[in-house]
Length: 133
Image (cartoon, rainbow, N blue to C red; front, side, top):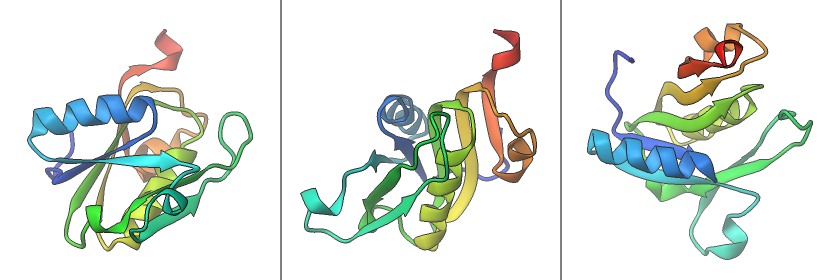
């Protein structure tokens, strides 16, 4: 699927946490849950945080995780259930960059991307394409 092997899988809540954790277990690597609109207020550790561009409901969502969980030199794969606007994958990629880690790409169950360039730019790989459902 990707030329580089992941050392960490990131999964955005809620369904990305489920499929991401299963993917990490299958790969034998670490897993980090990327939380929405949560974070440092609930935890005393240092966090990395970013806000998305508009999602499929035209919302801007805050995403983040504890900084210590992704280290410089990690190779990171994001796993989620669906890609529509690419907003989640873009913001998670920025979080990975903020940590000095290497972004491999995003793996999703369903590709519903409105902008086909994102498949290459992010890159995103999917099991199913929304146009065939």
